[in-house]
Image (cartoon, rainbow, N blue to C red; front, top):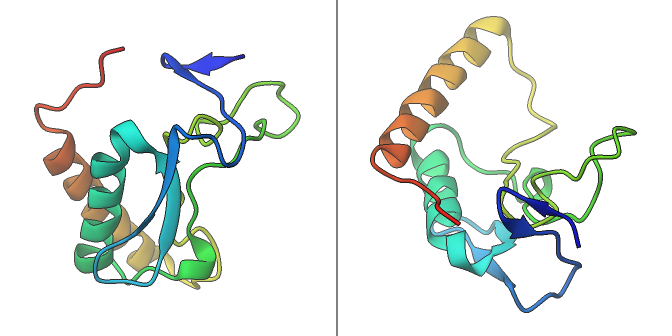
Length: 117
């Protein structure tokens, strides 16, 4: 099976995956168990510090290719999230503000963290 960053692509319901409720929300995300604390923690902080999560617009694991590229998405092994991916109408000023908040949140979480496989 294909792998991305050392993580194998897995089908739905694979035992390497778990479904987690993001604390403080009703959003449920399916992600790889071994990195769930990082991803679910990020989603929790996003919900508090950036904007409330829309459960219908958030997802994790999805065994799919990136468009017609023939390359697996980072969602395929369960190592990526989309948070509030659609359905939110922003203007450019709000988008710039949100991007700054997400960058600061990501920088804070990733400080000193490395995935080594």
